[in-house]
Image (cartoon, rainbow, N blue to C red; front, side):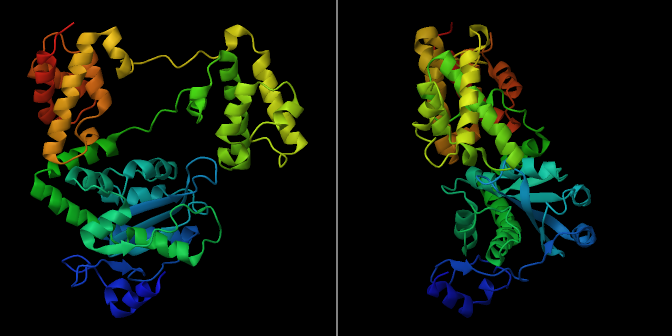
Amino acid sequence: MTDAQDTAADTSLRTTGGAPPDDGGSTAEGAPIPLLEPREGIPPVIADESALAEVIAAFAAGSGPVAVDAERASGYRYGQRAYLVQLRREGAGSALIDPVACPDLSGLGEALSGVEWVLHAATQDLPCLREIGMVPTRLFDTELAGRLAGYPRVGLGAMVENVLGFVLEKGHSAVDWSTRPLPEPWLRYATLDVELLVDLRDALEKELDRQGKLEWALQEFDAIAAAPPAEPRKDPWRRTSGMHKVRRRRQLAVVRELWQTRDRIAQRRDVSPGKVLSDAAIVEAALALPANVHALAALNGFGHRMGRRQLEQWQAAVDRAKALPEAELPQQGQPVLGPPPPRAWADKDPAAAQRLSAARAGVTALAEELNLPQENLITPDTVRRVCWEPPKVVDAGSVSAALAGHGARPWQIELVTPVLVKALTAAPQA
């Protein structure tokens, strides 16, 4: 915290607990105001069932939307579980809940059923909230709302500053939230993350309504709330950073074996896989195919800090991959589901390539006209699929049906259908 921020805290009640002003938080000169303290102070961390019951009762009795946030320990722990849950609701104030001490928050989720949950970048937090029994039936995503409203920067700090005129201190976003006890500055930061979320929601709702985009946003929010849990990724080892260097199937087998070994160790130790062995080291070993522990130790990522026992475990993984029969080696690349990469279209289907070029140009122009990111107007994958296999009869009805079949929302279908009909009919058909 700077001296200037300390001075601002001393000179404005709004930075130390007062409610945000109706016209946002900027000073008369237009400078944003640092938000340094939650308006009711930092609440105690809820870590037992009796205290949790009191919070559930308080939030059930509250009114209006509930602001919800979760902190994970990405880069420190295995998986994406929540290590702190923050909430705020009118009439209930703010609450901090330790989901390690209170792993079942389904009672809280049920108490808030039917209530609108306000989250920022909801798809990031919903999986870890689902794990502890918190699943919204209605939501408002302030990050997505910012995108649809045309804001160029949609991080929480940028949105609070640009829309409400307050500055949030974001210095603790990447800390190890599995730490216990959590330091007071981290708890202050976590409480402030939900302090103005409902205020931000209200301001964005007004802006979206002014732009004629509120119905679009509501459809997007409903789609997020209704989406089922994501399916586990097939062959996650193929996402190892640097895989583009690995060309031979035997080398791919080494990547797979090292990745799976690392994942088992990371899960057992509850640490981030990158702390066990780096992706770069996995790729290095796959390319070198070391013959023994001595050769492995000479590779980057397997240096002098690694003990003999660790080196032997990694060499054993390499040796297992090297011993596999040809029939059990992984194939190059994954089976392609859907259209091939666009760069291959000109050779495989020149007419489809022309359709895609025309469609992309039309979607880009429409997105610019509407002042929103084109991937929010319609996903690039949907455009590719419709252009690769267009309806046999290209008209508004068939294109609308194709878009709906790929998961487009009604507002997207209404806006994009004319663009795609034009692109598909202007370009030559197969």
